[in-house]
Image (tube, rainbow, N blue to C red; front, side, top):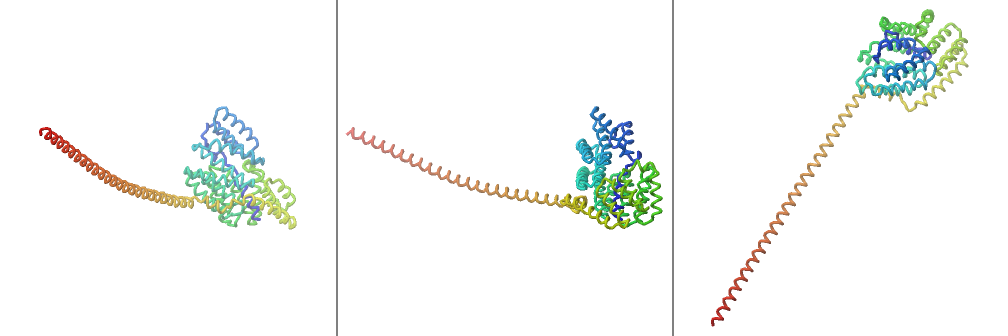
Length: 437
C-alpha cells in the first residue's frame, strides 16, 4: 500500500503555482508577463503551445532571448503531459544554450531546469534528472547562488522518493529548505513543506505529515493553489491511516474544485481516482483507469495494488513480477550511478571541507616544491660560483706564472743583448788597438 501512496505523492509535486506565485524572473514587460503568467496558471493546457509559438516568434523578430525562454518554458510542461520526452528535452536544451552565460537570468534558469528535472523523474529518467541536479549544483556553487542548490536538492529528494529511499528523500528536502531560506526564496517553502509531508506519510510519520501540511497552508494568502496540494496530501494521509470517510470527503471536495483540474495533469488525477475506486470496491473500473497511466512503473504499481485488494493474488503476483522486471531494467540502466556516491558528491559542506583540505595540501606541496627548487637553485648557484672562483684563481695563477716566465725570458733576452753589445764593443776596441800597432 505504501508504494502506491508514494506514486500519488510523487505526482503531487508538480502542481504549479497561481499568479501570486509566478515571478517575473526575466523582468519582461508587463503585457508579456501577464500572457506568460496566464499560461503558467494552466501549464498542462495544450493551448499553451500556441501561446509559446507566438512568444517565440516575437523573440525571433525582436532578437529577444527572454521571450524565447518564456516560450520554451511554457512548452516543456505540455510536452511532458503528451509524453513527448524528446521534444521536452529539446526545449530544455535550448534554454540551457540561450542562458549558459547569462548570470543575470540565473533565477529563471534554475527554476525552469528544476521543473524539467522533476518531469524527468516522473517519466522514469532519474539518471538524466540526477545529471541536471549535479550541473545545477555546480553552477550555483561556483556563483554562490543558494537558490540553485535549493532546486538541486529538491530534485535529488524526488529521485530518492521515486526509488523508495524516503529517509534520504527527507534529508535532501531538508537541505533544500535550508538553501531556500538562505536565498530568501520563501515562495518555494510551501512546496517543500508539501513534499516533506508526502515523504512523512510514506514512512508512517503521520503527525509530522499533518504538521507540514499546516505549515504549507500558512502561505495560502499569496499562494492559493497550496490549498489544493495540501488537501491532496491529506487525502493520501487519510487513506494510509484507514480513515476512509475522511478520505472520501477530501476526494469529493477536490474533484468539485475547478482549480484541481487546472493545477494537475491526467496521471496525477488518475492515481488519486484509482485510490478512490479501490476504497469503494470498484476494482474493474480501477484497473481500466490504471491502464491509462503513462508511466510504466506507476501503472504496474497501481495494478498490483488493485489485484491485491481484490484478493486476486495470482494477478497481483504477475503485476509484481512485471514491476520487478521493470525496476531491474531501470537499475541496470543506472548501475554506474551509485546514489550514495552522488549524495556524498552533493553534500556541499563535505565537499567544501575536502576542497579546503586539498587546497591546503596543494599549497603546501607547491610551497615545498618552490622551497626544493629554490634550495637546489641556490646550491647550484653557490657551487657554480665556487667553481667559477676556483677557475678564476687557477686562471689567475696560470696568468701570473706565464707573466713571470715572460718577464724572466725578457730579462734573459735583455741580458744576452747586453752581453752581445759588450762583446761587440770589446771586439771593436781590440781591432782598433791592433791597427795602431
